[in-house]
Image (tube, rainbow, N blue to C red; front, top):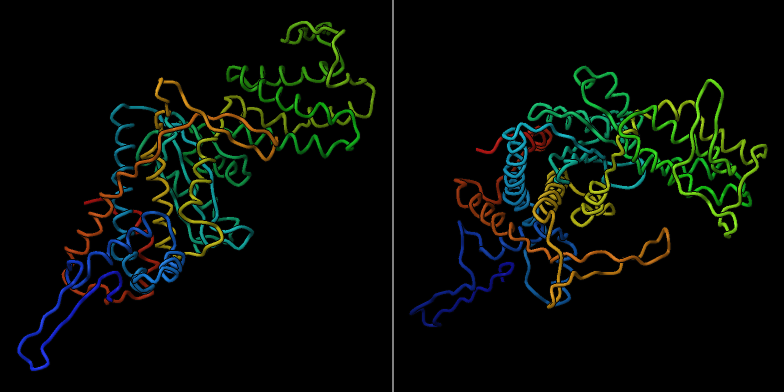
Length: 438
């Protein structure tokens, strides 16, 4: 056995004739099945150790670990990088051709939990199409610490995008480091910096919970108050002052005051329908002189919070990008450690998978009706329906396989046994990301 290939050799004891037969063809002295298995392990997001353990249980022949990593470095990773670069170029060129202003959402993800991460991936998605436009992978040695990797990756990625297309808006997750970068970096002032409204609402909920006791009546108002904040950003029409006015109405509403008039200042009323006082209420009204109201006023009117409202006024959210970050776990779980080449390739594979299967059609039954599936939420502890999509086809895998085989076929010398100096690895990291497709 030579990996996955079976080779049978025979000969005459008298020395008259001999020969051999192989179950697979060869490409430059390497069996094609071994090359295909090595690349398929990476292309499918699997790890060599799990596949090797499965083969051991089944007593199947398989390629060795050194062979897998050599194939990954020499053939599979360059094929993935080339395919991703072509896909990315097409996406950005379409924006340039249509002369579209680009609005992007950005979010960072480390390769491991905690503060000992080795790599950080900062992803940029198109707010209009949800397609991943760019991935920036940074090694911790390119920054001062694991925490600072996100800022470095963000700057590198945004510089790349602004050199290709006209970026007019960036939506981030309320990171103070990113906010400072957007504020002080020359050339970024013309880009509108917005926060993901979901992250802001989540932080607001945490501050409300911390401001009251578990038995406080205010606890029953936390969800409605958070929903009111969400709604105030949704209906303010991009106006910061209007959003603040709508937001501050909550202080009157919780006290059962729905119309107000202050001489020489302002007047108004709540936007909801008239309240039937005879109906049972889930949340009791608050006394405007109660300690609960003092706690609520402190959170609602916090100067630093109100000063940030211009970051919320456009009601942006990055749900698609959050889903993509979860999707990366399919190809590079945080409990596994990878070298830079493998980690970059797996992140690019996740982006290829995401973009290729974006906006899949809905599944329908024999009568043409839309099919649904049940999704359980750990947060709400409830089931909810979600539209079922058609299954993924992964048709791009044939192109990746073909590129890997072409890479093997076109090399002149060395093969799998050629060595690469360790010093070249660090230099080749940026080259692998930056080199244009010939």
